[in-house]
Image 1 (cartoon, rainbow, N blue to C red):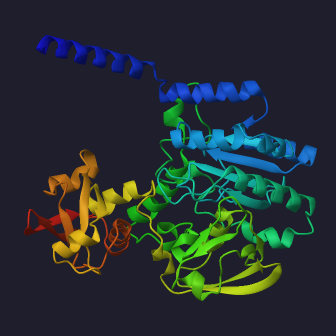
Image 2 (image 1 turned 90 degrees about the vertical axis):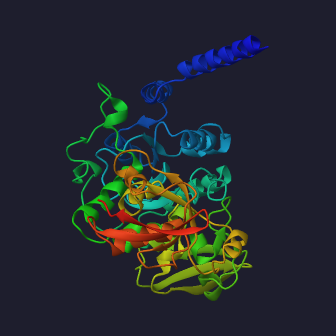
Image 3 (image 1 turned 45 degrees about the vertical axis):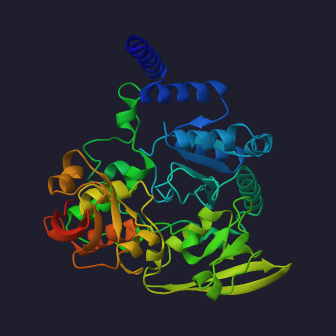
Length: 444
């Protein structure tokens, strides 16, 4: 029986190894994607200059999809939204379509978006005027609450309508273009200058030559951190999700309110279920991403956002009043950008909230910190916490004298704004019922 069991294990191992060996490498995925798209001949592949030129020649609007390769979740979303639905396909033929799989060389004065996305869509005029953005998420892998085939279809239809009315509507679209960026293109950031060029290298190592979307945000945060400056709130809490205001939108519409959470900013501003948000600060809204864009441009110190909504067929004007510190209502813990910040502020720890029942059992008040160590980094700077003696299942109850940082993201935000590289922070943990104090080094 023992020999039979060993034989079965060997067969399973051999089958698994063979299956793994048959999987395409990241390099093969990128090259096969290029070959397939270029072979089909519909999309302009990784050539924004050509896309703008063709849009100017044809008079069509331009659609640019920024898509990370080989992100599996992103590829699935891309396939579902762009390559299978007949209505989407029909609408795409009204656009000049560009598939951009790297951010090397892109013009950051135009292409400003939430770089924690691995699927982002821009609808533009050939002169660079932006009609709208599409593509968002509020979870690492779950997209269903934020995007849909129907939602993209309606955004594409609205983009065509705005294009038909251009340039008469140009003034209303001006706010969709952002301020001058820190650097003109991603490879010019100090973090990237010696690693990347303005083009992806298909003649060599394609994967290593590609600047992914999230690496733009990583470089921006590193720019401030390496200079010993706190990371600005706008950079730390980018593109706040409407959910942070208590506003839940229907992803199958342009911008219809699905629900409003009681006691939130959205409710206090007068927004109601069923409201159709037509404009924010005068900008036409095509998607949740467009709403995030307007919020992103609003000061962390607070401000007012004017909203034109349609309610039961009647146009209404509302004012969304954002208090100081409103951005911190958003959760940044799910973001890809949290990974380098974990090195900076947590020495490579990933934390999760202790459930309320367990907090009561541990005699920790509901409004006090209790963050369990879910993962301890093992290598390089991300192993700093491991070297400092932290272990999986430790519960952090105090960080640098603070016990009111209730979420993983709250602690990250505090660490990279209140503390500089080279400093040390005292951390109190619970381990097997004992209260211990450890010291974490702050890093770049």
